[in-house]
Length: 236
Ligand SMILES: [Zn+2]
Image 1 (cartoon, rainbow, N blue to C red):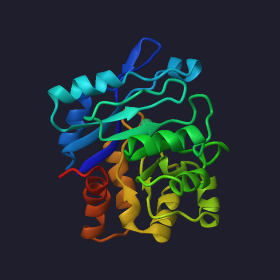
Image 2 (spheres, protein in one colour; image 1 turned 90 degrees about the vertical axis):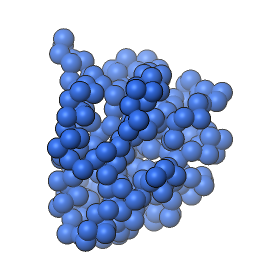
Image 3 (cartoon, protein in one colour; image 1 turned 135 degrees about the vertical axis):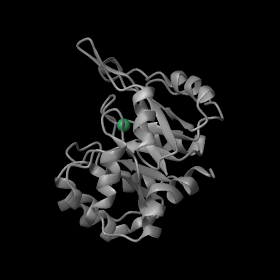
Image 4 (tube, helix red, strand yellow; image 1 turned 120 degrees about the vertical axis):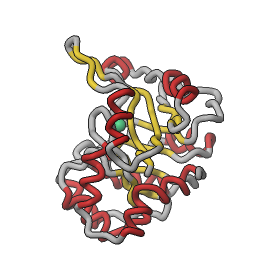
């Protein structure tokens, strides 16, 4: 299995560090997850100063750890000329600068890099809705992965108003209620759902529990936990 979304911690708050690689790897040992897609940790100052999290920390860690798949966190205020070929995908967080998901800069950068894009979503904020995910996905050719699948209860009520093109995928971390994931499964099926933990904010065991709340076949679970992300990232 592959955890498609985690952060290389730690998250520091009031002198205490939350999350580290040793803890994460010990959690993985209790599961069937053997690989993981990593982005840097977003620090409070990245959000208040519109700065880019430390992508290099992810590349450095990937040299020590073969199971780590590096993902590049880009920032429209600081777009790179090029990104290292070792990154398998890009990630965008609309809370940095409150940039709408379907902003032209996001579309252009995605089309330029030609890499799959992970995007943080929250249906409660007008710039980060799943409707905007659908709108962006219609204008790019790569897979678009909605991290947190909209997250909040409102998602459940809004989902049926949206039409998702084939390149949209839904990630399991940070979903407030299992009924949201159940509705997504009913609408788009196991082929479009992806296991992600959002460690250290979330935990791979919680993400796996969320998937277990869907009554699905072994084959469908394999799609969600392994096959879909392997295909998206062209890895084996
Ligand atoms: Zn995250």
